Length: 280
Length: 99
Image (cartoon, chains in turn purple, red):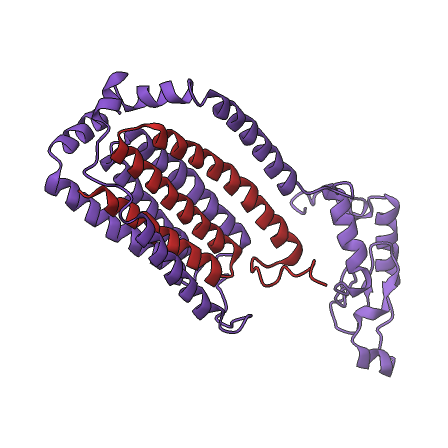
């Protein structure tokens, strides 16, 4: 920071055309950024234009012998505030662009007229506010050994009450933001098993029907599927075949087999011969 | 460099920000315009501090920055709350208190 301060104080000493060049470049950039912010239709583009304005203003602060404010501008505005803006834009929806339909008729032209009036009167009022050349801050900065030290003396001396109130403001702002962003949960949070059960209950009759022949001895389309509990599912046979009564009678043996498995008896292993170990 | 040039630049930026608040209807963009207006006043403070050789302007500009940061936090939280209930960030939609 002291390097910046030294550089700026040197720039102030050798002022003239370097300072003019810095001013004109940054002034044009900042005005371009502000106009781009107003005219660009997408909010994200507006945010990027504002960042241009704020960075060029930071350079102007440094040129005006306020290196601390320049750094704070970069850190707080372009670093924190604009990132917060972009974050909220991402949450709210990036593609939310303004419609060009005017709600109040002629509002846009009235606003521009108002802006012209305010701008002209502001410039006329302040354009000659400072008489004579700038005093510069060299004297004020060197009293305490630098810009930051001098600002610290002011902040913790004359403005110490405002500084303390600022801390209260920041705490209440943080609390307010937390309260506003917090969403109250009215129902208990569902666990994963509960979610799965709810999904099955909901899907129930609308879910997939079993395919014909599942678990039965035949895979033919006229063979009703066997459900895991041993009953047969007529719904698994296509409608026209049900209408014709063309259902293949259920194989009694397979039904018994399924029922035995359901009851817990290992029928398949009982029918296996001892030398059939390759069969799984 | 004429110190008045900085003040005039701050006036121009302030005007652009004010027109932006009036013209745009996306709440977030309006907020950005307010930020530009605050920055313009900060530039005027710093310019006057430089012109008068007095550091008070810089201290006040610093306080303006702090207040602006707090304001952005609360304002964006309000915008997000409104968006959550109305699914829109346009100020034209927020007419619940009107009728």
